[in-house]
Length: 427
Image: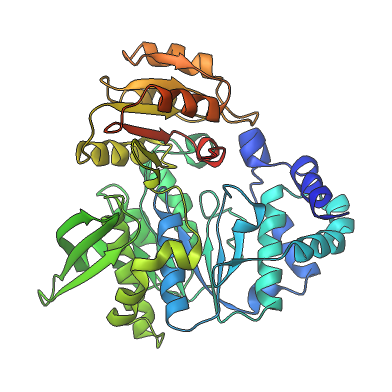
C-alpha cells in the first residue's frame, strides 16, 4: 500500500471515534497492551508526561512540548484528533512523522489487526509509542484521547501526570456527574508519580485526593494567580504572581484565547514540578518558549486568526465549558457585527451549547463531512428554539464563504462548534 491507501485502510477498516462515536471506544486496555507487546513494549523505552482533562489538554500538551524543546530535549508529542493531516498526531520537535513510517508500521502490525480487531485510536497510540521509541526521544508528551482510566494511552508510567480540569463532556461514556467524570480522568494517576491538577471543584477534590493517596498532588490554582493580562498584537501578555512569595513573572503567549490564562497556571505548576525533578524547565526557559508555541509545535484552532478585514477566528471549542470560554472571549472582543459559522456532532449536549450563544449574531449552520455530524438543517431547527437564526449549509466552506460575503471589514466571523468543522476550513 502507498500512503493514501494506508490511510484509507486505517480510516475505513478500524472503528474510528470521529466517524461513529461511542461504538469505537474500547472499554479496556487489552488491545493496546497486546499491540505494545508485539512491538517490544515501546512505551517502556522513553520518558513521558501524561495529560488528561475535559478542556485545555491540547493547549497544555503543546505548551509543555514547546518548553521541553526549547530546553534542548528531543520531544515527542502525541495528540488527537488531527485537523488536516493524520501525521499531526505524532510529532517529534514539531515535525510530523514520515509517510514512510506510517506505511511501514501499518504493514508490520496488519496481521495482528486482523486477529484482535483494534480501534483506530488503539492503533495510532501504538504507532506513536513505536515511533518515539525508535527515534529515541528524551521525553514524550502524551495527551489522553478520552477519559483516562480506560484510555489507550494509559499504559505508560510517566514522570508526571496532569489533569487540566473536569467539565461536562462525553457523559454517555464517562458518567453523568462531575465526580464520576473526575474518577475516569483520575485513572491516569499512578502510585508514586506526582500529579498536577489544573482546576479543582469542591465536588471533584475528594476524587483526586482518593486517587492520589500514594502520589504527591499539587493544585495549580492554589500555587499562583494571574495578576494581570492584556491582548496585544495577537499575543497574550500575562503577569503571574506566586502565592507563597508574591514574586511576579511576565509571560508572552502566542495562543491568544483568554482561557489560556488558566492553562498557563497549569503549565507553570507542571514545569515547576519537572524542574524539582531535575528537568531544565526553569522560568527563563518557559518565558523563551511560550511566545513560539504554534511555531514550535504546530498547534492550530485555538482562537486562531486566519483572515483579517473581516477577522475570521477558528476555535475548536465544542462542549459547554469550551463554549463558555468562547463567549467570554467574544465579550472582550471589538467588532461591528458578529457572524457565527457553527456545526456540531450528534453526541454532544447540543441544547446546552445553543442556549449559551449570543442572540445578536447572524448564524450559518453547517456540518462536517463525517457520520457523527448533526445535519445542518437539524441544527438550525434546534437553534431556532433559542432565538438563534440564519441559513443552513451542507458544506463548511460554503457556509464560511456566505458569511464573508455578508460581512463588513469591521465584523468578526467565528467558526466553532466542532473540531471537525474547523478542520474542513480552507482559506
